[in-house]
Length: 341
Image 1 (cartoon, rainbow, N blue to C red):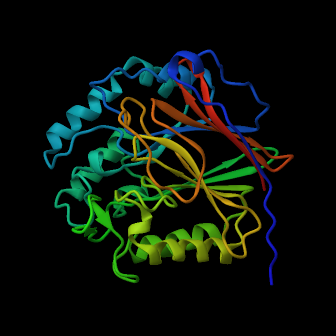
Image 2: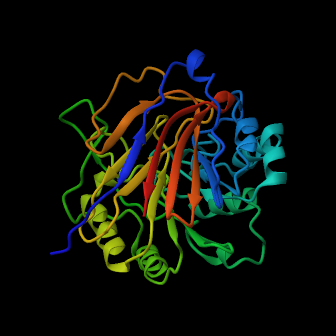
């Protein structure tokens, strides 16, 4: 039997805004840096773009809910995207850093929406336009916004696998027995990614030579008891991804997620994988779950952050290590985690 031994360290740095803002982002030696976040409204003060720029990431990843349009009117959606592009801090970041990412329900166009959304093709066009995808890109011919980006440095390689958890996702099951919104589907019922995207994802991991493989999911993968959208609503799909990660033998798989208006670290062991699987949720660039009083998450490590924040990952190729940070206004490090692979 394969014996799995995990080594990780968790540094607890948490406080209210007035005290945590005294803590600044610690400058770490990094071969590559990723910044990411989700849940952003152009109509609310975009207070974090200067902090994101100051962190000097190599790429910025949108984790979904780039804008809040909730519409099948493409003129309205285009107007909202254009307004976001005019936010000065974001304009400055775009000049400095490549932008990639995915969508979630509010930029997709339908709250909690999936395969049933009638304007998804048109919405995809507007999304690709906003992301600056070339008109002749093969992505323009593909259904769904999933895509892989490879970053090859002298000392190592990083692959970012961006998923689409909207275009193909089938129906959720309403929870009629509790105050929660959704409950898990019957095991085996429904899909998160759709058959073609699943095949593509399996090939991306199986064929990866990267030192680290970063999977971007707009919704949480591990936290599964809160009753909102989560991969846990499709338990068989959770198991499927774990099996694919195990069989692929891919190095350093990490999941980045958003959607929840809170930020947190979730960790689990995966049978046959010689490192823990981390789901780093960073959610609430402009607005958060201000009334948050706690919710169950059997995989959580540390505390939940319910103030505006973004995620920052520092990659150390020589030591096969990643430093994860939840960063708030003023560059405050609200929580951090380190993991060797």
